[in-house]
Length: 454
Ligand code: UD1
Ligand code: CA
Image 1 (cartoon, protein in one colour):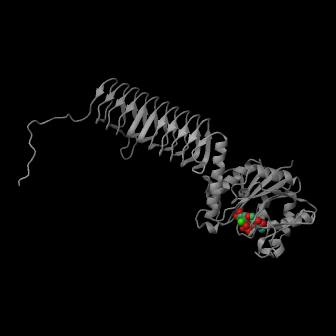
Image 2 (image 1 turned 90 degrees about the horizontal axis):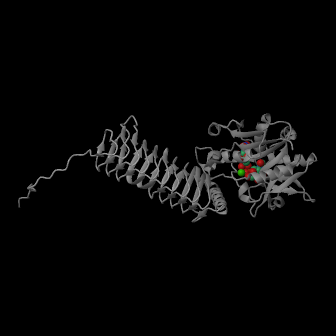
Image 3 (image 1 turned 45 degrees about the vertical axis):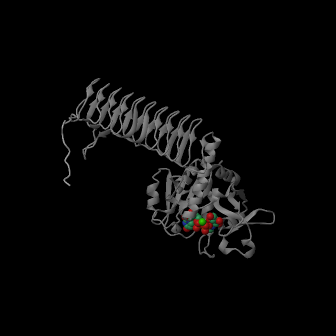
């Protein structure tokens, strides 16, 4: 088959979003709508990928620095036909051109593949049949059922208005014909715009068949003009993702209460309780369980680890069979080996923790290297920051840190060291010794409390 060019129309201002963020950059499933459309477009391996952006759309270009995009500016929005014209200089005169919309984020690759296949070297149009077709261009068919034209809603006769088959806007055209057809467009219509849809009648006039392909589900062709539609499509996307997880064997306590804003990879027998949010790239290996109300962003959780409710993990690596939470916070650079326990109200940042070590309560560990089988008592703090510089704390294998200890970095606790509770450690604690760094307790026998005079 001849080569494929894809043009994504994204010059719309999106006034009804009431936002300073350009419409096509609003995220759905954690990714800008336009980025999602481009991801889908790329799966068709186009030889060119052109994005038509609008006046002031520099933010759009800046948000998508991908080298494979050819940008075409449409300074004034004179209609979809005019928008495609802006892409012409970037298009070859051979092969087919597929037109997509930057604000129709859930279109699927298989649908586009079917559309391109249906076009052959003629034209194809993605259509839908709606109970309420108001606002859409209507598909006009001749007596033999062939598509003959598209009439925009505002230009419809009463008979045409009654047609329920509509234009989704996505279409495939032979690239060699584009320049000629686009030059023929006129804007003498109800909206004073150059309609791309008028190209359909021109193709039929020139003896081409315009093949109609029905979209498999309406949401694939649904566009976003406001936050209501954005929220609706977000729910559909989340529902689709949740069902895909269930079908792949993941246990979800409630498929309506999980949000995936990125990619979630999983092994067998993974279970996820309600209200969890997954962002970026998350991997949950075999047998992992995630408790209710957890947020995981760019996290790798190894086999059979358990994350208890209300834990927040970002940029962390959790080893096999670890037990995390409830109410644990793992920040970027937290790396836990096998069987580590991290309990409630514990924060860990940029630190490695060795196999079988436990940090169970009320603790801050930052910029530390902790060996295996270490026990860090409640209320321990690595004092890693002097207001300007960060320093590391090194803790050897088998160390026992008593509760309420302040470890003032840079500092080293050698293997097997024991730190007495309440110590403020500022120097190396030697291996296998007890280090006590606190004022000695004294008792004054015979001391009298002051007494109030009546
Ligand atoms: C268009 C179709 C209509 C179809 C509907 C589906 C035309 C004339 N009509 O109508 O048949 O049923 O989509 O949603 O094509 N855009 C530009 N530059 C412009 C105008 C639009 O880039 O000058 C972009 C918009 O950002 C948007 C897309 O093209 O992504 C569609 O534009 P919009 O104004 O929403 O088209 P409709 O009038 O809804
Ligand atoms: Ca529209």
